[in-house]
View (cartoon, rainbow, N blue to C red):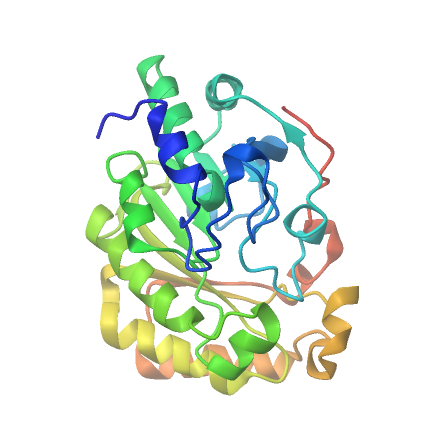
Length: 307
């Protein structure tokens, strides 16, 4: 697909990019549910070493953290940018330059974190950067509360999808993210991602992922049962067509205190039960985390680096 600047006008004047369908005229300065107008806003663009090994490798993933979010999870570790909306305004041309600068620094890939509400502008920047020599894989890193029609803008541009599958339970997704339809939307989105990329492809020399879908699931304290339902779903529907990352980095933040069960870290035995279940049902392609991942030092500084 060839994009022209009209794509921003078409999508931003009456925003229905995500399932919130807030209809904000973001071109006119109105802010959508995501907290953003049509001006591209980002908080950091730098090499990031804390993704899964097949994403970060040894050289780091060239990660751009965009401001705003359509989920605003109460336990979000990136709260300052997802809800606080910290960030700097940048043009589409500048974003294209950033992609090329990250490639020059040796990034394994370009990693777009929570970019869905800016996707028309991001697609223009990716198109321009590719015309100027951007050749490393593009990773779309998302909470998965997406519309399939929006994801299709990325067809031919994104090589790797790094989606979350956060909740199975409607009650949990409502309490944590005010999104009762989260599982319905996210599971459909993951299906579209796999349609676009096909089965995982890795570089035989480096072990880096070149194409495919790697689904992340963050285990939440007190909700082992929900994690098991998600893992069973992923395995029964996708089998070895995807990779699964079972994450143990849940870190309580101030806003999560409103839900008492989320005011603590995941107990070792809770995470062990989830891993045991994954092994028992036959999940073979995946990643796990050490308990030391649940530290705030794994949260990058959102200081405008690289913008």
